[in-house]
Image 1 (cartoon, helix red, strand yellow):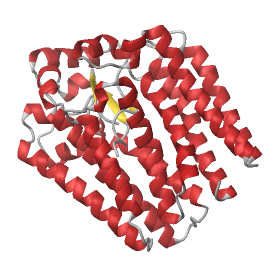
Image 2 (cartoon, rainbow, N blue to C red):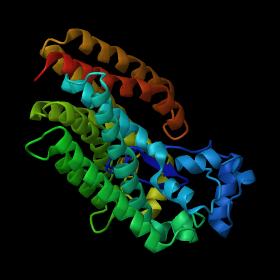
Image 3 (cartoon, rainbow, N blue to C red):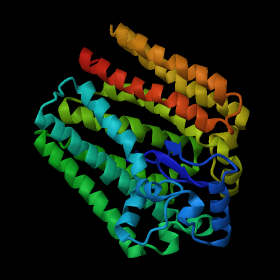
Length: 366
C-alpha cells in the first residue's frame, strides 16, 4: 500500500505501493519554485512567507509546507495525508463491487475502519519508509525536509514506521475477525501490499528506479489493492474481478507516466529509468495515453460482454472527455501541460472506477 505518489520538488515520493504519483507543485517559475530551489542549494529553511502560507500544506504533507518543530505535526507530514485519498476511494469501489454493502451502522463502521487501515496506517507507512530510504538524496536536494533537517530523529522515524506497519496489520486481522473470514484474506492483502511498498523504496530492488516496474507497482497498489480489500471485506473476491481491476492498474501505470515528463533531466542524472528517459518524450506520451485509454475501453468491453451495457456505455462516455483533454493539453506538450491534463481528465477516470465497481456489484460474479 503506497499512497498516491506525490512528487515534492524534484523528488519522487511513493504513491498504494509507490509511484501513482500525483504531482503537487507550483507552476514553473513561481516564487515557490524559486524559494525552494534556493533552499535546496543553500540549505536555508523555507519560511511560511517564502512559501505563501504553508500550514495546510504541512498538515497534508505537500510542497509549500510550513516549517514545523511540533513533533506530531512533523509525524503527520511524513505520512502525507494528501496521498490517502485514492486508497479510501478504492475501498469504496471494492465495497460497491461486493454487492453486499448496505448503509447500516455496522457496514459503515466496517468500511471506515478499512479506510483508516488503507489510508493513515498503510499509506502512511509507505510514505514514511519512502522518505527514510530517500534521506541521503534529500540531504542534498531538499535538506529542509523533516528527516535530513534533523527535525525528527532516526529513532523516531523507525518507531513511526513500525507503529504504522503493526497498526495496519493488526487492523487487517481485526477486520478478518469482524467479517468472520475462515482465511485471513485482509491480513494477506495487507502483508502483500506492505511487501510491495518496501521493495518499491528500499534497495536492492527499489522498483521506483525502473519506469515499468515502479509505475505498475503504483497503479496496482492504488487501484487494485484497496478495491480487493473493500470487496473481500463485504463479499467474495474472485480471480476474474482481480483481473478486471488489474486492467485499471495498467491505466494507472499510464497516469503514473504522466508525472515523469517534467523531470526527464533529473531522472537521467539520478539514474532513474522512467519511460520518457527510456523512449523519449514523443514516444512515451503515446505509450502513456494508449495505456490510459485502451485498458479502460477493455473494461467497458468486458462489462458489455457480460450484459452490463448501461455501465459499459457510461465508461465509454467517461473515456471520451479524457481523450479530448489528451488532445487539447497532454499530446501538444506533456511537459508544460501535465498538471492541466491531470486536473481535467483524471476525475473522469476515477469516476469510471466507481462505475465499474457498481457494475460488478449489480451483475454478481463475472
